[in-house]
Image 1 (tube, rainbow, N blue to C red):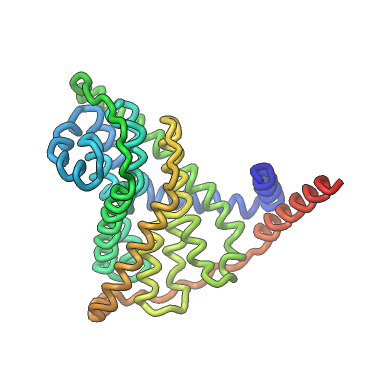
Image 2: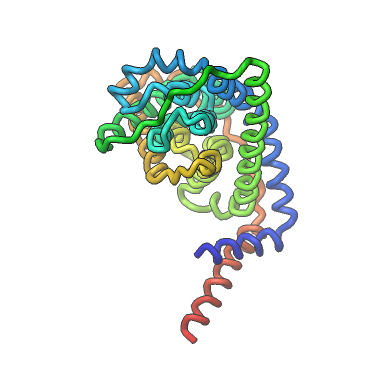
Length: 344
């Protein structure tokens, strides 16, 4: 299967260079216009917190709630705080820094990762609220639900995981000087930003190839958001659904994060040997809880919908079936050849 998918992608890229080039341009534009301006400062801030030792003070303040509610050591506090406020994938980048400094064990990092990777308030208000639904209050409401669902996800998973975990040895010398910490934080942030840009670009290429198929399938917009979050959210107004249903879908997509975000998280934590088993299920739980809370809120208080009227639906992009057809034909051709060889 790994060989099949690799060859299918290779032939799709080979046959459809124009679509791939368009996807690269869209991905780089998305990274430069929306993602990096919001994320890069938080990448630097997370590095500074860990390198200067300022995270230790924050850890002492959050020691009790983290231990009692989430079975996490105090050292996980910066990742939880920045993960809830900094945006995808600042939480994973902070965990990577804590692991590199040996302030957190791999088991604790994997547990924290299940709920400390969230969309930022700016992303929810500016992109989801204003660009998708035409209301900043809508974005603020969705962020509040999103953050609460993340905390609830971590709480449920912590209660389900009762096995004792080995703790990291947090004894270490005083943090680096500010100059050295600042230089190291900026260099680490640049590496993280490059990783984020690369994944946004390649998933934008995949969406460009598959978009004609996805837009014709029932629930194709949701599948589009399941692949890359921003494109899926921007396509929501194309769905002929009432406002409450669109907001519920937006909550689910924000919680799930999309495959592009999840691969970013895995890439940032892979150098530390974290397998992140159950991470996809945790994100599905996050999305399901956020969607259920959104639907329940609008059912209990219909007046809330008065401030959440979506803007006019954007025009659907022109369908170019060449890339999607090439990808599907490559899959069928390679799969059929494999069956023939097996039969022989």
